Length: 242
Image (cartoon, rainbow, N blue to C red; front, side, top):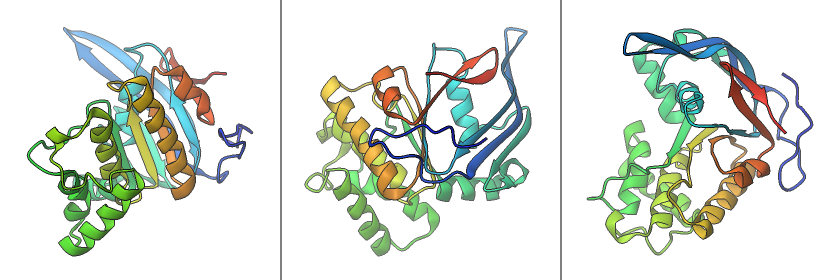
């Protein structure tokens, strides 16, 4: 799929025209009380390196299902997901977990932080899982926490942080390994308007600074309007919207 000529909120085109992700003939369904419900029906779609993509639409159409497959948290029933030309679902579970840790960052509506740990300790976890030394992990994590505005809150436990601060910790955790792909599922769904707008702005700034590809599932049409492309799911297919 070629660059569609869409622009970012700063008037700049996406950073590249080559697909980072290629979805080929993707099918996914679920059994519900003996009834088969098909969610994705042979989806073919490209995501360009460096672009920002909003997945919008009503609840239950398959937005989060799509995001989970993009992040390899779930496998499709059939079809392929190519990342830089490699079908990642050909990987065994160990290699897939390694790919996910180093290449994909996740931010969810519920931040999933560990309350007994500090902001720094929570955000460090992906670096430690990778096997990096604690000293390097700390330095790397402190840098990204400063960038998301938490310089003076690193040592605070999660329970001492506001909702907006907790989501910034979750964002820092997602970005600490500088993933090529950041996936966000309703990242501001539990935040007030002021905090939501701050997180929106931060996501777009980081997209430009880190040249990462950003895919956001959201009901927030204002946020969606700032992203370079918008799609919805209609009868199991991805459809571009205005």
